[in-house]
Length: 334
Image 1 (cartoon, rainbow, N blue to C red):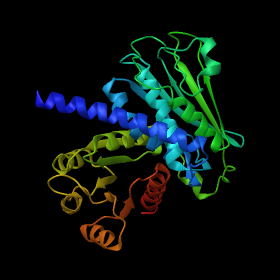
Image 2: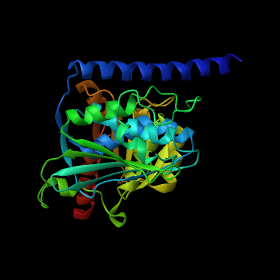
Image 3: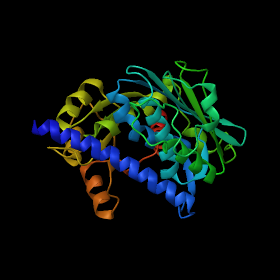
């Protein structure tokens, strides 16, 4: 009974926290107090962060999430955390209003000087009459007494206001009740890079050029969401949630690159790297450390353990693809 009570309290506290955060955000935007930290960001990084946030609910409701990444890098000037919040809000909404075992899709593509981010589902759908009001503050399309969604009608209003602050637009489409829905965010983006630029080298690789990548992270949500994105980019992905499991997987599958979280339970990432370096059947394995620590001492420790690269979380897909491209070039030259 203690565990049951604790889980209920944890869930309800988390839900209340989200509601309060949304109220505070709406208040800040209304009073002009919100500050956006604008920087150049790869759209793939936004999608990765959003998937990581929404993944627990998507998995809990046993939905199938399909992610379609752009074929070439797309950069936008934005507050990466706020824009990821926008997309995760839409993913969470899709998960809430789709019956268990449904399908959710997330995609991004360039359209001239804009990028379109789409979040769709096979869920409850919307009556055409509610579409003009859906982004109004405190408006709820589902007016039933049970209020199964459990919200205050703030989330979509927050989405629109944050998108507006980024100079973009958001629209919703639905063919009616039971027909699912799709939200489309359009944002200004930077011009496409020339085909011979570095960006072309890190575009999503076709499957025949993909690598075998092992992800080792005890945070299952982080590992699984990264695996989805790399899989969509054309790589064959293996996952392990601790060092003891990772070692036999590496021996059997012989990955070309291993992305290893340093803070693993039991034997940490440093110890796993040392053991992997001792495996004679893995001579060409490239080791990449994933960690929250980017100080010189941590980087020195990872080098001493045999890591080829040291990346600080959160890591965007574009950075990883750049490393993968360098690996392919070295293999080709060998």
